Amino acid sequence: MSERKKLDRRDFMRGAAAFAFTGATWMAVGEKAEAKYWQLDPAKCTQCGRCTTHCVLNPSAVKCLNQFDICGYCDLCFGYLQPGSRNLDTGAENQLCPTAAIERWFIEAPYYEYKIHEDKCIGCAKCVKACLVFGNGSFYLQIRQDICINCNECSIAKSCPSDAFSEVPESEPYIYLTGDTHLAHPPT
Image (cartoon, rainbow, N blue to C red; front, side, top):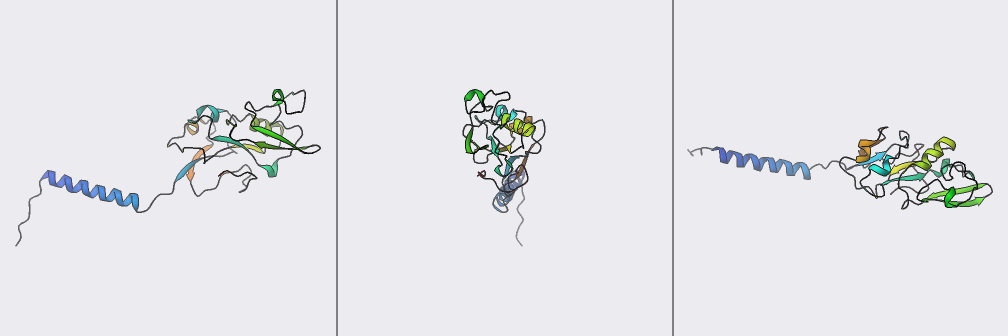
């Protein structure tokens, strides 16, 4: 009959540590949880301007997008032009965007297309707010996942007064303004 070895406290702790390490390794390699990322719900956004000031990136990972299928292509676009502009032209003094991130292209009288240059956009939401108040609301904000560093605790989400940010699984599509799943210039 074999003699049973008496287990002292040190041997017990080594065994427990090995078991815990093996369990943690299995959990990490076994079933991987789906990655999550931060998303902004445009229906909840109040255009407070905190996306510009509270993002850890400069400029912010939050960008303005134009949902072209609901855009009116207006000559007098309130998301593009300063309220009370004397001229309806592309002069810097007439533009609402502080960084000239919106480009206006003539299509045919009286229609214009408005393209947002995301590399210039700081996510201030001035154009979004004006488009919602006076226009049809085709401008909206969204987090660009190709720019966002996916902070564990998003500083914009913490400061958002309308609770418009949430962490969602990677498989969930972007939330668009009208619920559509396409855009002329989709986020990547």
